[in-house]
Every structure is written in C-alpha cells, then in structure tokens.
Length: 191
Image 1 (cartoon, one colour):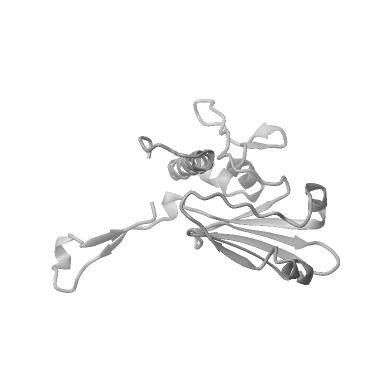
Image 2: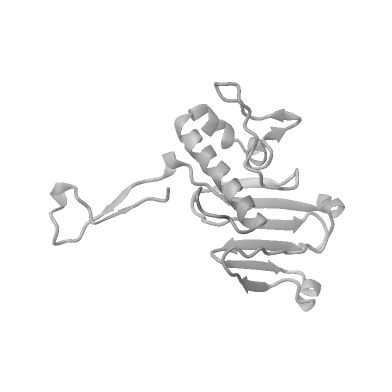
C-alpha cells in the first residue's frame, strides 16, 4: 500500500487511520500494559481519536514517545465498545429522555445503512436507507440534531477489535491429505 498512489483525501484519511490502528493493535500484542490501557473504556476514545484524555496523553511508550491517537473524530462523550465479533463499525444515538428515539449508522463492505425509529425522519426519507457505494466513495450522513443537542443523546460506537493476541491461526486440510505432515492447504487468520 505504501507504493500505491492514493487518489483522494478520503482515501488518505482512511489509510492513515487504518495504519495507526494496525500499529496500535500490533503494539498491544507486544506490550501487556498498553493492551490493558487500550481496553480501559475510559481511554478507548482517546486512543482512537487524538490520544488525549483530560488534557493529557493516555499513553507514553518506553522511549517517551506519546501516542497521538489513530485520528478518528468522535464527540467527547461517545462510549466506545470494542467487539471481537464485528468487522465494521456501528454508531448508535439514543435519546436520553422523552420518546425513545434511536438512530443507527452502520458500515459494511461497500454499503452504509442509516435507520431510525422516528416516524417523521422516516417520512422525510432521511433515514431507513441502504446505500451501495463504489470503492473509495465518501458517504455523508446528516444527523437530525446539532452538536449542542448531542447532550440529549447517548452516543455509542461499536468498533471492531483486531488485536493479534486475540486472533487465531486455523489450518484447513483436505481429507485426502496426510494431516500428520502439518502441511495445510489453507491457512486462515484475520491479520
């Protein structure tokens, strides 16, 4: 990927965030203290965004280098859940009081889904839609509230977690092959 010419700012942003997240994942596998810090829900948003919580960097390595975060942008009070069983992020907004309004934005390969239980938003055709995308296409979802109104909602981001020490190596053999030789035909892993 280093030699591949990135054609847009969106591709460059995605590449840089993924690269930093991959570096974080590998470093978590090597350093148990970093893994423990990353899995602390109070630190997770800082790790994924700018690396700062309460005005301080949440992690400094043994060389004194500060972890400057992966570069995602999230509202400050977003609760992040790391899930080993999902491959794509899902963002939820749930109204704290009054009618239980929920808004869900879900990514999957080359598709975005935005849906809600709010009848007026459904009538306006702003939500409850599924949009197929071309590779590298940027998607914009406009929420029906502004940043000041975010205080009336709980924001939850479910993020895939691909830390190597949670991964496994699966060896697949065909039944006509000698499995005793340990020469599998297929090797699977998520990294």
